[in-house]
Image 1 (tube, rainbow, N blue to C red):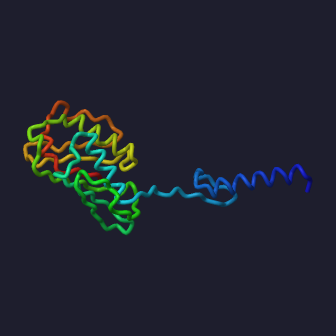
Image 2 (cartoon, one colour):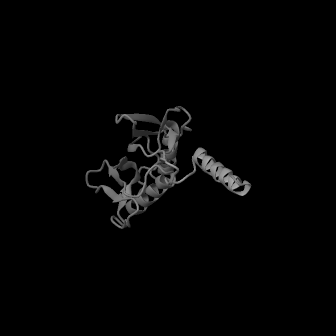
Image 3 (cartoon, one colour):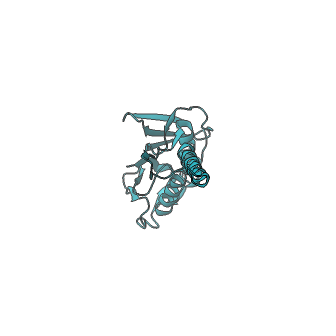
Length: 184
């Protein structure tokens, strides 16, 4: 074999091995090697913290000891699990590895509410919440996200992530009444 061809072959082999070994590669087929993308993982404590931060930034909660946030998520075996903490927790209380897109339901309990009469725009709240969760890669385009209120007169604020959401513009929800968010 000539020296030039041998050098090119070695360089090409090294590139393929480096690319395959790094984990940063496409799903192309190199010499019969099929690369499969893996689901992103996080810990359940980090998922809880990211959800809590998104709720705070969307002005749904204040993030204090008077609020309890339950985060429900699916496990790889199909069963569900829940992690719960007060709104002022730092999220480092649990380290179980889970799929980052496993979130199914957020339940919010509030007691001794200081901002009892505060109202928030339903449309803007939905958009802010979904943008924050999507930015954390917790939800993705195509997911249906619904904000529920314990006031039976309020509609469910529901939409598909990635689609234009204009329903419920100027509809004001009492912040204290938002008690559940579902992701399908």
